Length: 523
Image 1 (cartoon, rainbow, N blue to C red):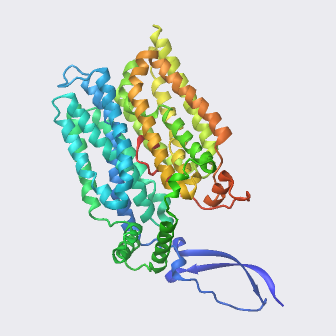
Image 2 (cartoon, one colour):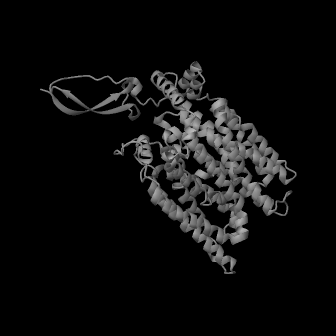
Image 3 (tube, rainbow, N blue to C red):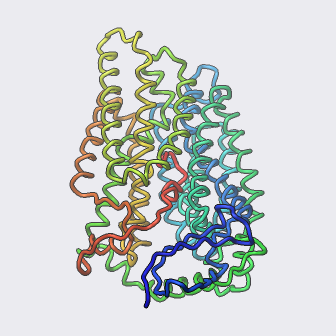
């Protein structure tokens, strides 16, 4: 007589009882109560994470590109302050300063559009590698500039490379890192990118704009060297029918002693299936009624992310503290903001899968709204001649809370949800559209920020940003779905109405991949 029982099997890989080699299997079996049996688990099912040094090297190598991007993004804040000093060799007008700050995101928009064809034609690794030398040249052009147009030209070159990198870096990591270590290694680009911002802020307090750019020309050198040490992604090589090189690249990434047969077969199968499903009809259906809701939600999240004013805060940090007349040294303030920015990366990673997306977006909206309204009120009373010297700590405190609020919600979540809610058929074209829209908003905010201050004052600018953040709260409440613990198939079915809605299935998500965009946009 058979008896149904629940059996837990612990499999010890190579006779080791380490947790990383233990596989727990929960299964239902029919068996006699006195029956003894053995179950052999194939080696390919074990989490063979013993050979991750090569993946660590790959993640660090591309993440060094994030450091360059972070440094380039933050450069304008200390550089413009340095140019405003009497002993500076170059001086920029307010109009020129606004263009220096906004040319990078505008060029990044063009670079992002060019990056898509590049990663498909010459490969992910080659595309990333091709940005290193132009990054060096851009900073050298700025460092030895004898006029403002040379600085603008350098910012254009840097911005173009930033746009390419923001697209290529997450694609490379997504195609090379195995799931068992994706959570930890996926955090590296954002962390190292924010480290680049912090380095720029610290160095900017000691170096003038020219020497700071010279330092920026040195930072890409380790990135350039390390990129020669890692292979192209196996998926792209398979796409180009270079199966022998693809197997060699996958073997290097997983370790020489790892059996990659099963994974390689799956990659081949998925790549071939993607080629069959990738038709020209995806672009024609991009704006169809069926896909309107997920597309508009993704674009809406990008809008509220950028219109929170985050890049205006990053690009013009020093100037804002100077205008505030803060009793704390403005360069020290920027360093503190940079440290908080770096620490907030870890906070977001710990909370994003525990509390859910919408809860964090609620908290993010409210924190940013309160701090921006507080900053606006501070600048309002200052503009009316009120003595605010005893509240000189308020701008720094508001900035710190604002950065924390942005980093735990509207920083990483729009990028995470873009990958979750966009249907598979239009995911590539829709993601490109959402990314281009994000860079467009970045350009608008950074270009108009100084003009906005001249028109409505600093208090008015912060109140406007605060009002947009408050509106974003209602957008999240009404339109944004909760995606925590839901499979991509169920999310697509519920958003597009293709088939009956079904109970969601819990899946393991590596949410740190959402932070792969190595920009201040994803602090």
